[in-house]
Length: 184
Length: 119
Image (cartoon, rainbow over all chains, first blue to last red; front, side, top):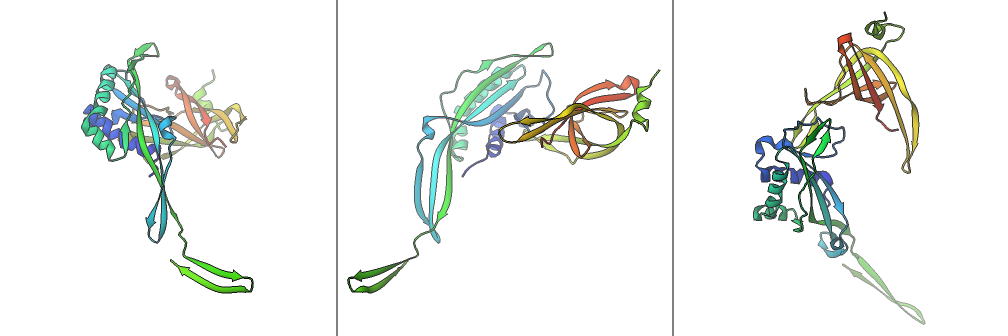
């Protein structure tokens, strides 16, 4: 399966909401880069914004190909590990705490199982959560950033034809001696 | 004294245009648009910058901006009313409002809008 970035965002959004126990304010977890722009938020609002992008990694280099039977012909499955980098930006007075909760949350067994179903795995080497308050219109807005990486198995399937029949001709110096047809 | 409010609807200057008003809401963290509202309005529109060609490797991009004077309020993206910036349909192009001057004390509004189609 080749997921679109939008599908990955839609997959992660409810997980992040759950890890923060923000079911009653689920829309405070938002995707970045929305096409037409969206209304902003207040300095006191605790918000999480996230963006998803693939990054280079040596684990992405191996490329597997498996041929298997698939009616009526054969199919080939090719796959590789895509490394997704999710950039989290938190605003609000609890920005650092909320990203810390997320960090703990992604290490939980239950979260691991949720992502396992989607063939997505946290790369455990999570960097520090950085506090980076933002100066906007004369006030410092509390902000914290962290980037986490996830390995995702990306697979593609393609039906490939198999040999239906083969004609074999036997020739010698006198010419064609025999024709043999082998069917599947 | 010249009244801008009167000039805005003066037949010598004013023209009709369509305002596209877009509200919406967040659903699961993603902005989802409500059906758009098309409002017939009257005001003064003039080019602010010449239409320019941006040569980028992928294509020729066309940019440009206009200034709009109206008696009716115009909006940029705001949480109040959950709306994103108004667009103006003018000369067969959509223009997105990026800046508002609130002259409501003088009974008019002015706005700057940029050409958004890119081609």
